[in-house]
Length: 232
Image 1 (cartoon, rainbow, N blue to C red):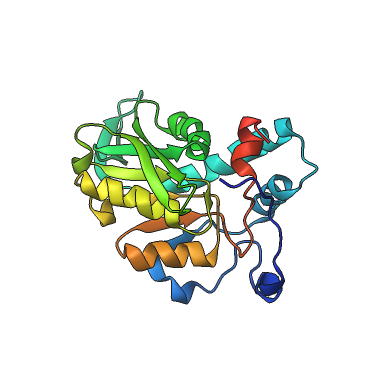
Image 2 (image 1 turned 120 degrees about the vertical axis):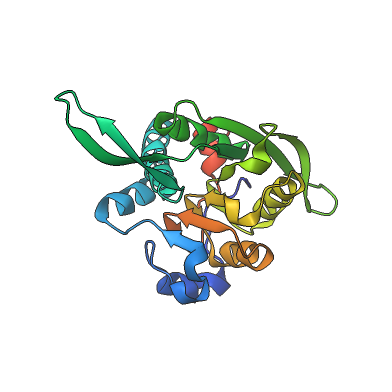
């Protein structure tokens, strides 16, 4: 994540007026992009996170709340199977349960902010990590570290990265997952804020991936990682 806050560029002023809280022209991105359903609670969380006057304690608290909402909806993208259980009264109940074979992968370091929310929902889920940094000379995103469950090629992957700006980091992460045998249609990207260009870059490169976010907006809060971990 860059250290810059969400600063509006002159060329983006018109776009900002067109993109509301989490409203965006969905037709361009099709079913690959899924937005959380807009409501005042989500809008307030987004506002607090974007506010430069928010204290770090409040920032982490409200960021965790928004992360949890994204993670919960992300779990809805995973496959379920029918399950019949017996209640304490001896009655049979027709329900559902997760299919086995899911895992999380966080793009370090900001993606690690989402791990707690995932573990709160799935206590035993396995989580891998990818470290990607920009080259000082070329500004190109490069992979420095990757560690996954050994059978990740058999799993559905919840890829966690809170801010999708240019899309370069996510593209590199998906490339590494593909090199480990993970198919595009087995990846769900969980992100909190993303730009239209970031979404466009990722789905143009990987047409099978699904992206879940709370907001698509030309300006993202790029201070997220520094603020969350107290390094700003």
